[in-house]
Image (cartoon, rainbow, N blue to C red; front, side, top):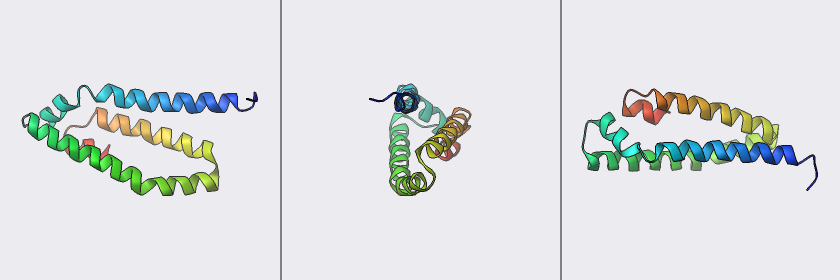
Length: 106
């Protein structure tokens, strides 16, 4: 591996680490959080959790070609940096979400 590629690989590794940590932190508390947000019981929270995960997967499916096209046009680094910035905004919105709808927006 050349020395020129090492910083890029470290950057990608740190990006993936931030992504995995973000999901790893929310998964254990998501059922209780959704119970509080919806005012329901565990089955209601499970329903909303399923809808939330379906929405997340659907948005990834729809926008992956768009992000890929932007990456081809402008390069990987600017697209990854913009995605990281948007991901940070997403975490802030979800962290301060007062209800389930703001959680979906995040």
